Image 1 (spheres, rainbow, N blue to C red):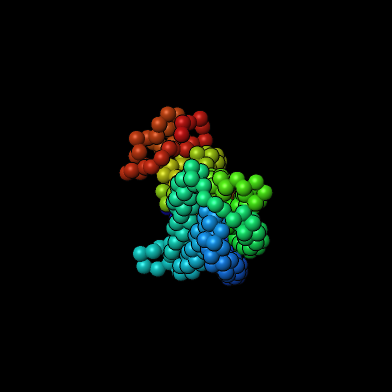
Image 2 (cartoon, one colour):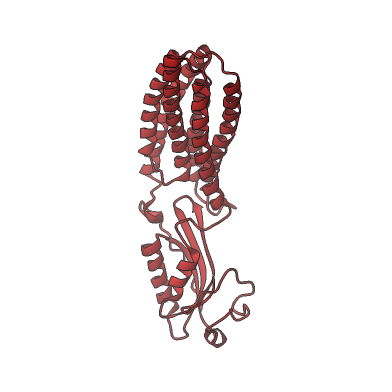
Length: 334
């Protein structure tokens, strides 16, 4: 007997409480406000950076440009992700958000590499920098970025897409703080290399944030289990059910950020009711692991499977090509 069921919900509380209705509209509103703040200040900063001959200011303006691009990408990705599943796109375009997050991470890494090169070059040949203009512009930039960061923090940061835009702006805030300090040093001491040193500090932060975004988005594209979900632990929990004889072909992945999914082949004792066991397992997955999108194939175990209690599985006789370890409620290797 086979019972396959999709335990997902599509109402306002579906997907472990992640809503795509009013919340998505509110997210877009906050992102649009942040985008307006950033683009307005960026235009002024480019002019001031050229006049002051400050690499830190110009790098801040370049970073703000990537901030603006990251928010635009986030807004586009949110629109695409809302399109219903149809045709060959059985999950819709939800992973457009992950593409946006990966693009944000890559731009941070690439921009950081360029700024690191320019900063090192200026350490050896520092130009004359207008410290006062640099300092006061950076203070204004701090205010703008605090406001923009606050706007995006009000959005749903469980989305890797929005988190990517937030990391861009947060790094830009740190950049302006470093630029303000460097400007003050130049203003008080005339030490022009402070401009390049501040840029290198910001580059380190950009690399850290960029690597984190690329790594997390890469895990989703490679269909890896979400970092907070251990498939071996979940498999053992499923196998620990009193009526379950074996669990195999267990797969845990993320459709997009905040939307984990699970599928498995579950073999139960001959006297057990497949539908009851499936409902029990789905409830456990929802309550204990917040996995609501599940597909469980539940079958009665044959006698040869029930006889296997230690060691390896029964040469894969239960499936033509089983994937991953076999889980039983007994000591076993993963």
